[in-house]
Structure formats: structure tokens, C-alpha cells
Length: 605
Image (tube, rainbow, N blue to C red):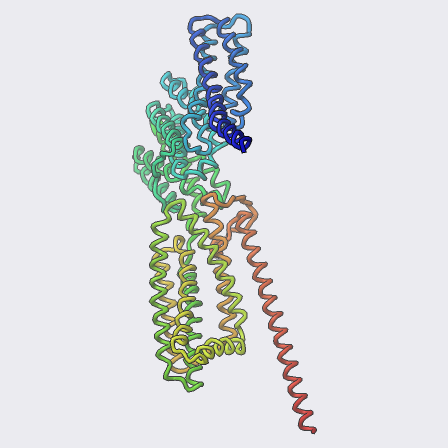
């Protein structure tokens, strides 16, 4: 017992003291590096080269103890420190170096270490890539200083180093915080445009660099404010480019410049849509948008050249616009399928009641169906309201993709069910089973429940399908599709129920099954595409893959392979249903033959 108590006390002391000491040692390692570099800068300012050399040797000893950890946590910061140290060390050991050069070299080393330690301290929430970005902020600060000195080539070089570091972490930043990603990307575009204008725009470049540094710090601290709201698409980009061209045509360079700045602001929200369809258009647009703004920012503005660049951007983006929209026909197919099934089931239920002398129970069928309509409308309102509140921007795209894939699963199941019921015998057996069970129980509520559940089930499926396409269809197209489908359904319902018109169940169900599979195929492509837009699914474009908007095909391996998988599943499911039907048919024929044989034997007796 005493041994266990001692062990517990020792364990507590180890947890309480050893771990904090380890953390303190880690912090102390980077702080010691910073202290040494500060001392080296002071010695360099005094012209004490020998002292600087000693400080660098001391730096090297401490650096060897922590470089492995820094390399793993912040590879960009590691490379910056390593390069700055190598340069300073080579300089002080070169014989008789200039004091000014030594001072500049150790100051660069100090900035590199400061960048890393700032990242370690400011990245409170562990935002991916924040340490690297904060470490690279030194390049941005240096670029601001160089701009003030009108040393444009060096300023561009410093910014170029930051841009290289950004490319290594931008994917993780985008996944972690879309708003911060948009702010950083936008400010980077504005910086690049100001630096490359002729002549370069000093004040605009410094202002944008300041905003870029601030957006990085906000991201590291988890304080990034909301960026531009969702709702932008490729059509938005084309509209902005059109406004820019109009301003250029009117000779209004300032308005054209503002429009291109707006384009750069909107681009991060839309770039995923472009990238998943055409990697070439994505790359060209990334390069040309800052080029166009640079030309418009020049003094005087190079309007003709900017117009030419923008025309090229429009040609690249135009074929990609509007490809995600569903038409009124897509909306109508969904309601027609679900509505037809409701009409057929209700008509069959009413007909079955008449045949079994239970026509007085028809009001229970209508009552259950009416309650099902009310429940479906309420469910639609609740779900749409909840999704509107829960999702916006990046989350909305993600939710649309997931909802669409859920709809595909439901459609596949529905298609299988329809195919299975696509002969009159199966259909009649289904209706007899539903109504016969309710009548056998003698419960009118059960009879009403059959109608209620039929309508609610179809209503729920309709809601799922419409939620999957809601964001990619205009209100007018959705409304038109619903109105057209309702008109057809009302006419069919009146004719079937009033005049007892019988529809060819087999061909009707087979036709609806084909339409459902078409919608499922399109939903699959659109849903995977939506997930690619928000980086939830990777995108690997290939120029030779088909791009057919009306069936939701995009030239990426992910969308194409997923749609091929769906086709394989449909083919397998169809073959399975046909096999089951063939077995059932043979069994029925065999039973009929056996029954006929029995009758022959009995008659011979």
C-alpha cells in the first residue's frame, strides 16, 4: 500500500513539474536564440566583428539543439533561419568583412528568428500554417522598408519569398478558415498589382502589405473577420469583367481599377469552381487578374493592354459559367416521379376498396393523404429554415454536396423499388398487401395510415431531392418546373380517379426509373463538384475527360469515376432485379404446370 502511495506521489510530481519544465526549456531555446542575435546585432553596430563571430558560434550551439523541432513545426521558418545564419557565418569568417555588411547579415538573422518566435507565441489556437506565415512576415516588413527606399527589385524579391512560402501552406489555411484565406489572397493580389504597376504604386503597395500582415496575425490568433458573403459564382466574375471593360471603353481608368480590385476580392470564393473544371483557366486567371490591375494602376493607365488581358480572361471563364444550373425540366421530373407514384397508389387503394365492397371507407384514404400533404409541407419548411440558418458560404457548399449525395442514395433505392414493381402482378400484390393488412385488422386508422405514410414518404423524398439542387437552380426555373409538374399531375389524377383510366404500369414505372437514374447521375457529378469547390474532395482535372453540363459531368477524375461507379451499381442492380423476376417467373410457370398436371391426373381418375 505504501509503495502504491509513493508511486502515485512520484507520478503526480513528475506530471506537475517535469512537463512544465520541458515546455519551458522549449520556449527558452527559441528565446535564447533571439537574445544571442540581438547581442550580435549590438556588437555589429559597434563594429566588433570578433565579438559577432563569438555570438554566432554560441548561436550555432543553441541552434543544433532546437533545429530539428523547428524544421518539423515550421519548415519555412527553419529554412529562413538556416539561410540567414549561413550567410552571416560565411561573412564573418571571410577574412576582413565590411562592418555594414556584417550588421545587415546579423539583422537578417535576427528578423528570421523573430519571425519564428512571433509565430510560436501568437499561434494560440494552433491554426495550420500560422507559424510559417508569421515567420514569413519578416519578408513583408522588409518589403515595406525597401518600398520606402524605392528599391523595387529587392522589394519584389522579398515579396516573392513570402509568396513561395504561402504556396506551401495555402491549402491548409483554406481548409481551416475560408474567411482568413480570402482576406490573405485578396491582399496578396493587391500587393502584387501595386508592385508590378508602371511605375510601381508605393503607397498602395505599403497599405496592402500592412493589411496582409494584419490578416495573417488575425488568422494566427483566430480573429479573422467574416469575408465577402457567399453567393458569388463564375457569372459574378464575368459581370465584373464586363463592368471593367465598359469603364475602359469610357476612358474611366479609376473605375476600371476599382472593378478589377473587386474581381480579386471575389476570386478566392469562386476559384474552386474554376479549378475543378479547367486547371488552365484557373492558372491563367490567377496570373492575369493581377496583371490587369497592374496595367490599370500604371501612370498613365495602360487601358488597351488591360482590355486585351481582360478579354482573354473572359474567353477562359465564359465556357465555365452556368454549368452547375439545373433546368425546370430537372425540377419537374422529381415532382412528376413522386406525384405519379402517389396518384397510382391512391387510385389503386380506392379501386381496391370498391372491389372489396368497402367504398364507404374512401374518406379515410383522402383524410390520410391530406394529413400527409400537410406533414410534408411542414417538414419542408422546417428543413429549409434549419439549413438556411445552419449553412452559409463554405458550409453551405459543403452541405449541398452532402445533401446531394444523400439524394443519390435515395434515388438509387427508389429506382430499384420502381424496377421491382414494374409489372402488373407485382404492383397488384403490393397494393393488396398494403390495404389487405389494414382491412384485416379492422382499423380505419390503419387504412388512413397507409395513405398518410405513402404521401409523407414521397414528400420526404421530394424534399431531399430539391434540397440537393436548391442552390444550383434559379427560383424561376424551380417554380416553373413545379407548376408544370403539378399541372400534369392534376390532369392525370382527375382522369385516373374520375374516369378509371388505367395507365400501363410496366412502361410507366420503367420510364420513371430511367428519369430517376438520369437525375441521380447528374446529382452525383454536381454534388462531388460542390465538395471539390470547398476542398472537401480533391480535384484532379484531365483535359481529355468529358465536360457535359446537362448531365453534370466535369473533367476531373473524382467526378467521372464516381459517376462511373453509379452506372456500375445501376447495371448490377438492374441485372439482379431481372434475375429475380426470371426466377419468380420460372417458379410461377412450374407451379402452374404442376397444378395443371394435378388436374389432369384427377380428371383421369
